[in-house]
Length: 335
Length: 225
Image (cartoon, rainbow over all chains, first blue to last red; front, side, top):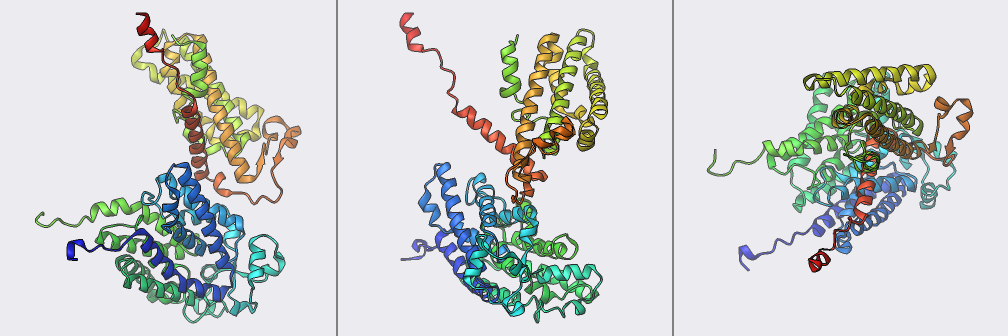
């Protein structure tokens, strides 16, 4: 067949399958370092998401099966589950996914019409509603010295666990510890001596970030996503971090620490690149990525929360119509 | 001329201040974190509406058209001041909870809306009834929204009833489940918007399900002609 007749072979299902494959290395690294809780979260989230999706489609009198098997709900649920603390009660997943699918997606008319990233909507609802559950994070096995089995994690999710045993394992995330300690006027070099920090970022977390990075590069290589948003977002974080790091290295963590802690890498490659809610013009995507990167750093360093991907993405989502309007490409032959 | 039945139906359902006209959203969204707060503000608004509607209706023959709005505002402001002082005297704790939202009833568009739209064109009787029904419609919306947000947000119902009914009313509080973690979103401002949206959905859904009034059978009319 000649050029105008070659089918592109792209479909929503293919796109979403690529994203799922790209999420695997990071997810495995996560489970390796922090135990099988994250796998339970992902499984529960996907089950609940398919349930809510089917329910919403049924209520809206839409065809159920074609939408369930395009995997968009699976991707949203997977990304949402990765935002949760690694051990979360099942009802937390249920409430968050409910908001993701219903308030984040279907009230606007379903996939393609939602102005806000659905997974981030669900996550933010949980973050402001259940501060205790959402800030109970656990140490990686290499720090706590306890390898949690699948049975332990299941017991936690479904409420049969011995809370006191778990309390000993819980800990603030590296970003949270850094923020608290800097607030108490400790120097970064002093803070970094704590065992939760690894060579570059948080211990364990740096490997997870590397996993997202590998998956993200594969997404770029298969042209599932374009380079503009990830590069601009990482550039935004790096530029902000570098300026303040050079100004005062004892108060502001290194750029590499910011990149390899928390959710910057997964945010850059998987969350901000959501084709529905991101800017669509090429220049617009760069502005959008830079804005998110800038906001992440601002929220982390001066805001009330240790990490700020979700808020940054939602705020940037709001600006998308404005960004797209002012970055329309020039039509050839027009001024 | 609107009948009593129509006035009642409009106030409670068809032109419900909160769910259809979407007026008075500021107090509606701000104080409905519990049923009792909603009840307090709802009653205050109800009394204001009845009094202001009656007074506007009484003076409607004497006020020149050009100055009617300032006059209405003056009347409403006086009524609200009376209501505010009364609440301060009788339910001081409730007054502290509702705070600025009682004087702000002056700015509730529903009140001047009824004064301008209904009371200034009708006799005292219908005007007072209209105020009562509009106020009741608003009060019911406040109660349902307050109940919804209180149950979801705190897992209780009728908490702090002692603010209105004295210390004996403390036992009115119902706790859904002792281990309920509380869903903060429902208590925070976004929860008010979500709750109001849900109520509007339910109302519109009920309206849609209700069979439309049957038109006169045209064929029968044509046959007889």
